[in-house]
Image (cartoon, rainbow, N blue to C red; front, side):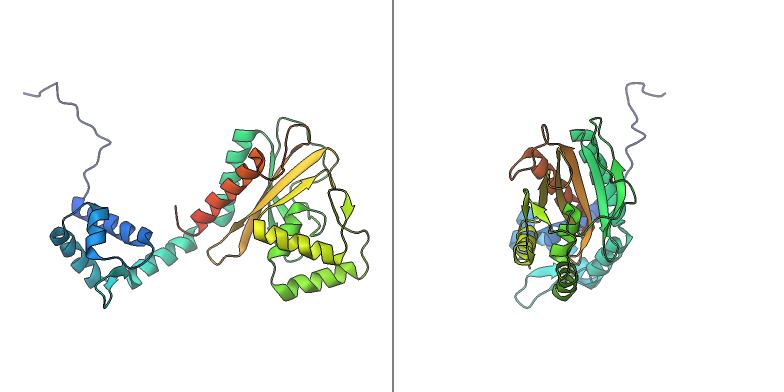
Length: 267
C-alpha cells in the first residue's frame, strides 16, 4: 500500500556526498589564496582534522593538491589543468553582452560594447534606451582613439611603444586637438589624462563630443590582464550624471568588475 502522505521530490537528485565534500575542500584551498595548514583548513571545512586528512591524502595522490615542506597544502597540477581548460571555454564577448543587458534593463540607458580592432575601437553591441539619444554612432561604427571614451581607455592600456607610435602620428599633424570638459589638450596633457584613466580604470565624457550627452566607460580585463572589451553607458546630461562617485559610474565599474572576475574564473 502506498503512503499518500509521502511527497516524492523528483527534481532532487541523489549525489555522491564524499565527492561533494572533496570538491568543497578544493574550493576552500583555492579561496584561501596561499598554502594552508591542516588546522586552518579543518576550521574552514568544519571537519575534524583526522577526517579531513583522509580527503587530503586522496587529493594529493591524484595531483589536485600538494603538501609543502612546512606541511601546508596548496593546489597542484591537476587543479591547474582544469582551471586552464575552463578559462579557454569562457566566451569573453558573451560575458560582456550579459553585463551590458543587465545594465540596460536596470538603468534604461543606452549601453554599448566596444572591442579594439588593432587601430580603433569597434562598436559590437548597441542597446537603445527608451529615452532619445541623438548620436551618429551605431553598431559597427569605428570610433576615434582620441575623441571617444572607449578609444581613450584602449590607448591608456596599450603597450608603451604602440601607444607612443599612435600618439606621435596623431599629434604631428592633428586635425583638431582632443578636448576634456571643453578644454583642448596638447600632447603632454593628453598623456597625463591617459595615465589618470589607466589608474582609475574609467573614462567620463560630459558633452565634449556629443551635445547634451554624458558617457561613462570602463574596461573588462581577461585572465592575462589585457582589455577584452569596454562597456559604455550613454544618457542625457540632464538625468545621467557621470561624475566621480555617481550611481552610473559605480554601475559601470561593478558590471566590468563582475565580467572581469568571470573571465578570470573567480565566479
